[in-house]
Image 1 (cartoon, rainbow, N blue to C red):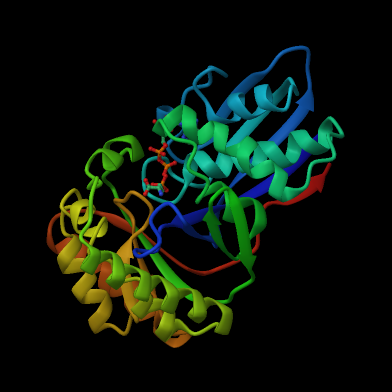
Image 2: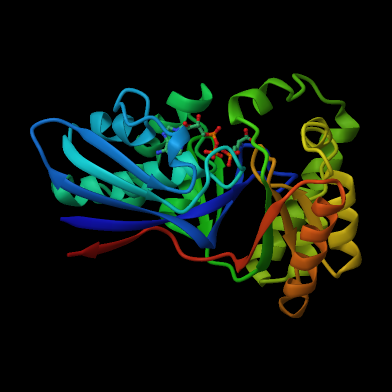
Length: 293
Ligand SMILES: Nc1ncnc2c1ncn2[C@@H]1O[C@H](COP(=O)(O)OP(=O)(O)O)[C@@H](O)[C@H]1O
Ligand SMILES: N[C@@H](CCOP(=O)(O)O)C(=O)O
């Protein structure tokens, strides 16, 4: 049996819609695989009651098909689905690494990205790779024109997840089809600032570079309490705040020393609007890790 721990991810980072993503230290999915004549899937853990075990509907089934690698697959969910932390992608990335090894396919992590993205196409309607790339490669990833650039980074963050859900498919429907040149110029400037910040492990630049006035405002409207949580996090010392993935999770970039205060402020702000939430105090971290048992 092979076991893979595949991390949660936070995509977009505001200014990098469908392009930027980071792997997070916690939480993570654990995917176990054994060879079998046909693919079967069982799911336990966070939100497992909402995740189909039918291989035609689960992201790992799409990966097993794409690799022609039938297996008994067990998923222990650490990443809650539809919360904006790349839950469907974590399972897909974990399965891609595990099945590639189990069937000796010899593909590199980069080559596994489009395979894991097949799972994303199944659930969100589009094979966007900005979650599977960091879950497979770790660190900060830039997916552009089918190519991927990766850099290891060490940036402290808090990911705060309200007890509400937003499906990525629904959140993609509110993305505007057009943007003004002014807004595009503004977004490019912020995205470039963020990328430089990642190469320097600089939370000030990364936080500042997350600002985006094209996609994020449309998405925040779907998240009850967003403005209050954002303000609370900034007051507590966050250097930038944005929607994590398609939401409703909210990502705050922090200086290491402020993570605890930022997490407490975000939890309290959600609580003040009657919404329970959970905060992960974590950092940009490594990609999927393979274990043999
Ligand atoms: N292995 C899986 N893990 C999580 N969600 C899955 C999986 N397979 C299928 N899904 C479905 O994908 C949807 C969640 O995906 P999505 O809306 O993109 O949110 P997330 O950001 O959590 O991936 C849910 O409808 C869930 O049932
Ligand atoms: N770029 C995608 C990312 C979706 O991330 P998820 O964690 O919410 O699945 C988008 O913004 O639609």
